Image (cartoon, rainbow, N blue to C red; front, top):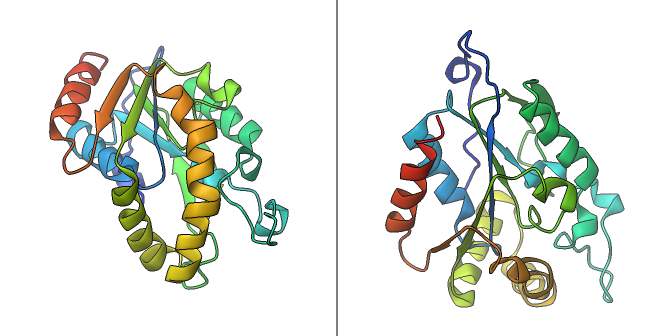
Length: 221
């Protein structure tokens, strides 16, 4: 699913100064449903109240990605991400600055990268599989949300996403899920579940968890 980036017409800020934005970190395994949850949050709160910035646009260039034992690029390691740049931009938003960067389109030659603009807002949502692992990102978060789903459900969602958005063949998706995605989840993502402030199950539906999160965030704006 395409990330719901706001357009300029939806991000016109009022003259009221944002004193201290509230930072929400959302993580979980690949295919857990982070993007769907984010879209629901933006639709409910509105882009004037929320700025959403994803880890996915901070991947290093393809030629800098680490290789596994079979020579396959592994996009599911912390070293695949420019964590320093991500943390820097989050800090800039928190300080009230507007930032720009180019959308990362992985290997999808059919996709034309957009220039993305991020405006400061009362709530800043920071999303990605490593947002709790990266110390410089995690220490800026005020609320940590973990969304989870069973492995076979995450695999199905990943197959559909990678086929439609990234142009990966099924064989490649299955290889990466077994060799890259699941080992990374167990080592770098799952350990942070117990230290999260809110855990949202999403095997079939996350509506109850969404209501709890929305009710809380509305008290922050």
